[in-house]
Length: 248
Image 1 (cartoon, rainbow, N blue to C red):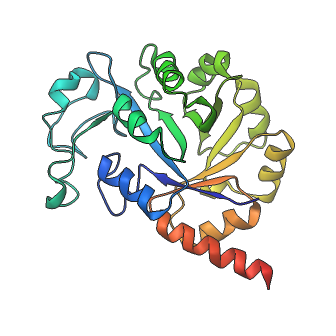
Image 2 (image 1 turned 120 degrees about the horizontal axis):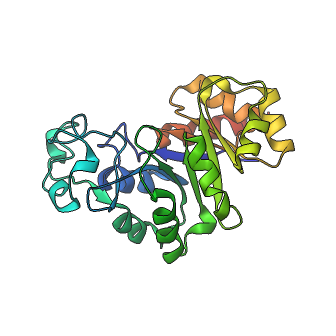
Image 3 (image 1 turned 90 degrees about the horizontal axis):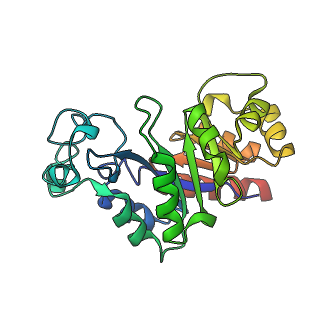
């Protein structure tokens, strides 16, 4: 099995995260999938931004939920990273899906509802993916166990992943009881036993956020289904190294 390389918020070591600069660069560098984060604006438009607040990655401040989409479009979402990205904007999920649809890319959309449990976020994102006919190559993930349970009704149409960084000897069973069909874990949780248990339960395992050589090689060695990385170009190179070593 080949571990899939998924660009975490795009190629986010080279361009401002969750912007078209980062996504386009990741695609052009050969990433096999894209990961992004979705929150809701005041006027209920799904937008791509990781933090609940605007301060870290835009020229604004305050909570995403307190601004309309039009207001958010006036913000600079790139200068914090480097001056040449000052024209970067917060992207709507609709625009992102329109861009990604013709491309051969796996998608992971994280619902950022573990701190602010946005009403109807699950159904809104699902309906948009269905409209774009992207359900079969998309995973919806969340740290919020209640959100996983709300997503169960879509389980036959789309993969649902439970996100966690917490150690739990019964993690696979816990995720299965919630209704998840995949498990997304922090890299320090990777072990031969957990990967085996998950695969025995027909539950793919993907690992975040994997940027170091030794962590990448560990994921490749254990047969993880995918890694989320800020440096997809390095991950692709190191995967070739791993595959070469396996052939020796």
